Amino acid sequence: MSDCLFCKIVAGEVPATIVREGERVVAFRDINPQAPTHVLVIPKDHHPSVAELAAADVGLLGEVLGEAHRVAVDEGVDGTGYRVVFNTGAGAGQTVFHVHAHVLGGRGLNWPPG
Ligand code: 5GP
Ligand code: ZN
Image (tube, rainbow, N blue to C red; front, side, top):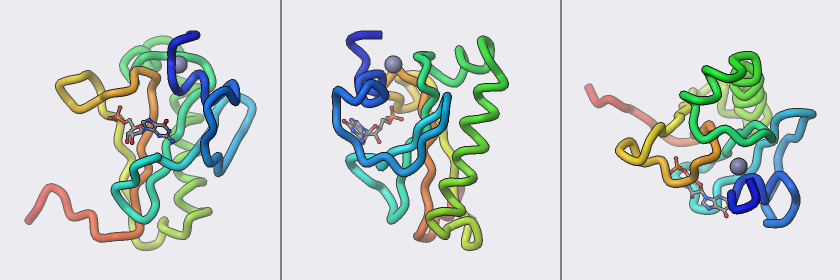
């Protein structure tokens, strides 16, 4: 999609700090990190949200999740714990409509509390 920010990152038209890249998936640092490790993992193909991706290509969704785990290992947060989040829909805080897994770690992430 020509007007999609993350498609432009895939195409190299918008710069990003890429930490892992495979044939179908790419991972790059979030521009506004919410934790010491905050990496976004996306499929190179455009799918608006995890809902569409799950329906269209669940194998590719598996690749995104596998890559999220490898990012956590590379970043050294797999031992202390990390969170993988797909905000899905504007009501859940999704602002970029190219599916992305947030990989968050490196600080306490106790949620829900208690
Ligand atoms: P969402 O709110 O859709 O779940 O997450 C979108 C994420 O993309 C946000 O955490 C935001 O900081 C990040 N983001 C927005 N624009 C850019 C950009 O140009 N480059 C990078 N690396 N991250 C971005
Ligand atoms: Zn896109």
